[in-house]
Length: 287
Image (cartoon, rainbow, N blue to C red):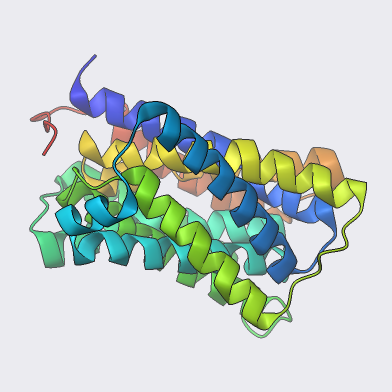
């Protein structure tokens, strides 16, 4: 298995697991701040457990070794998580996940501008195709009540794409410490805003599924992907979430995507396939 292929598999697997977030968010029927708090709390327990079993370095040692980039990814993950959860509660799942699929162009631009990451013409073409699909769905929301949710989704992809580049540039940073710190930040913000501690069994099931299994494991997989492939290519696999999350919403809540959402989603998938299948050129190695 080549390094690039390994990175692609990590990215695709991570996004497939994270695609369940929107399902659990809707299933819980709770407010965004309560959802974010409980998911972060369960995720923190899992991260600490994995770190203990693997005897990972503690946060003090990790921050001394990595410095500001580790703090930056923790802040970025916090913003991304809060913005995404809130977006799903304010607009349709289909809208959010299609907008999130625009992250490849953001990741590639950030990588080129700040880290000198090269991106091939084929990948840029694929990114352009993907972005056009996102435009199809976003334009339909201008002036609609769901626009604030769409804008929050855009904020989430900016933070997400920035983090992909930071993980790529400093691959030795502790994933567990970075994600654990983000979970603590999320909990602090949510406590400051307001959290409901009395939750029913339905919400508890959703929080355990999302916070203790799918979301943290998906994030761990995805944060390892930039070790093996450029950030723009790693982000290109966000359409996996686009397709899967729309299917979960359709199955679980009969939330049938609008025609233009489907059209935009198809364009996004075409862009992803063009940028990955049959790709040639140098194979990046871990940094």
